[in-house]
Image (tube, rainbow, N blue to C red; front, side, top):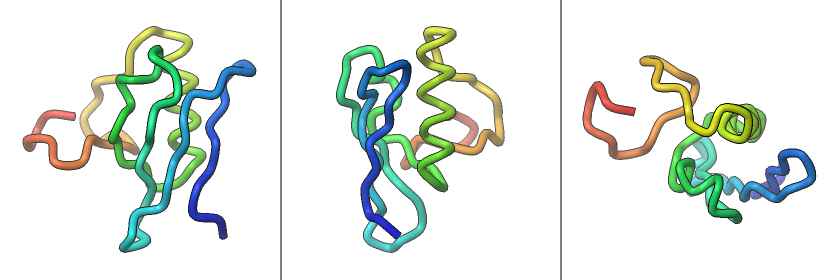
Length: 80
């Protein structure tokens, strides 16, 4: 399995996800300003990052649901 993947949304490169050193998921690195809200977020797999990027592109913001499939690493408890 690869250690990094390019995430594209509607022909635009949103960013890349790179496997963490511990191998417990992927971190997102933005490649375009419209995806900066995802910068540094942790995802369990590249597909979860792609889904989040598509939602961000479609709605202009990320969902603020508790218990979502992705989270900002190091965020305060209860805040995502």
